[in-house]
Length: 325
Image (cartoon, rainbow, N blue to C red; front, side, top):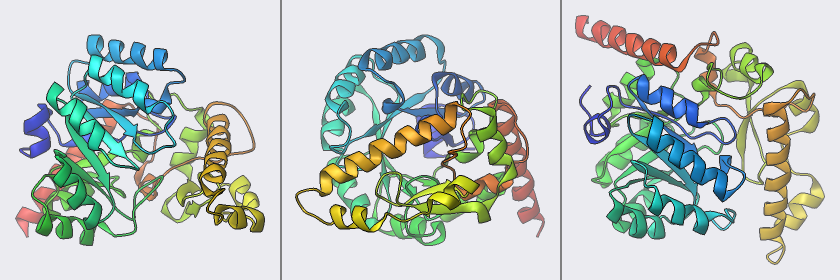
């Protein structure tokens, strides 16, 4: 493979093991590097700035290839300033920004040699981050897990290709090597893949969560506003069905209030994240598990290395079939 992603970061296959809240850990990034791809972890997966700095030091020592950090750059990230200072001190190969303006991140980390890649869901925002100096964008489509976009990849990637000059990385609905080939064919320089890695050996989530990734499929993914106040994809477990996917009347009323909106969203987000954390790491009937429809193709718990090898084989097989037509 010869793409911007492989050439820039020296990886063998153009995959970013996507940053997943609560799921990603430093071991996954180290193993991703050994498998010939590169991983990214949310800075908010660490409880304190001290924990975050220790993780950065660990990655600098033990991750032999490229790795990245995901920063939430909105006001909801109360640790943003501290995390940014630590990234200046211990710069990774790249940073993925989400949910806000990357201006400060670009200004402070680009001079350190850090590549800034921005999550985008539409052309308007892609143009803005390009003007700010972003190195690339991640096109988050309507098949993504977590906070997804609204436009399918078949439209979003060609649309961005027509109007921006910086590289595009596809994200959402990619669970096979043939899916990777389709994104490359559309014009992407690589793929950001998350959900298929939730059930890997290196993932620290509990066994029930991993088994759910295997047992459920694309039809079991629903959008809920109850976690963060913004639609987010989760597995439609019995508890999720009991809970429902829409905010109740009072929550909808309060979130429309200009003075209270910010605080209600923060409270909803905090409560939702705590529920997800309990479900991810402990035995509880309150099973709210984030995932995307690409879990359809995950059939067993395996290592990151094995998952990547499967992707590569499927990619080569799909490419060969096309050449034979």
